Length: 217
Image (tube, rainbow, N blue to C red):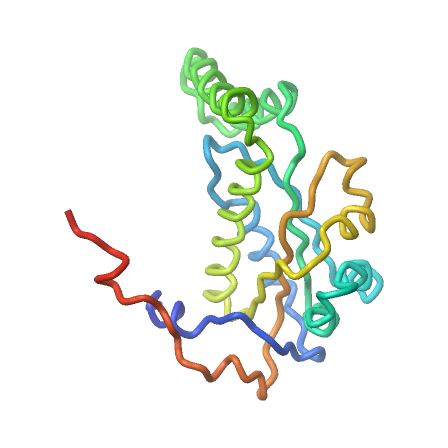
């Protein structure tokens, strides 16, 4: 596998083939991408809605009302669409739940390591909640880290993808009752396989030159 070739070939898909469905064995790996993504202090402040049925995708389409109608067909024709959500709060019981999961997986060889990790994670959560007062934004950053892993991983798996911010997220929250679940919709990613006439697939990459974005020290 040549990662540079994959990065050069992936792009924001503009036209999905509605007749091509992601196989189950590939879908399992896509869900594992969501699960295994990195996050700051392993806080994992996310939840994902994986839509494949016409009914579920229609709820997402409803959030393209108004100025976002250009995304309607992309959502309808994609094999699967992921609504990437962030938690509204990170309460103590959630942080303790994370700690228990980590302990079950054998991450703590000594009990003091568990306590140290809990203190460190709590420190950063409270830092963003109380001092910086940007906890929702910090949580969104973690969701975007996950989306980056998803986009790259999907390309490795040969799945085409389109990240979307052209959505009315307040409508999306209402459609799925996310407020009551303590969640906010952050972004949407459509997944599937491109059509042969997708104009964007044949366009060359346009990126800033390396010497403009990288300084070797």
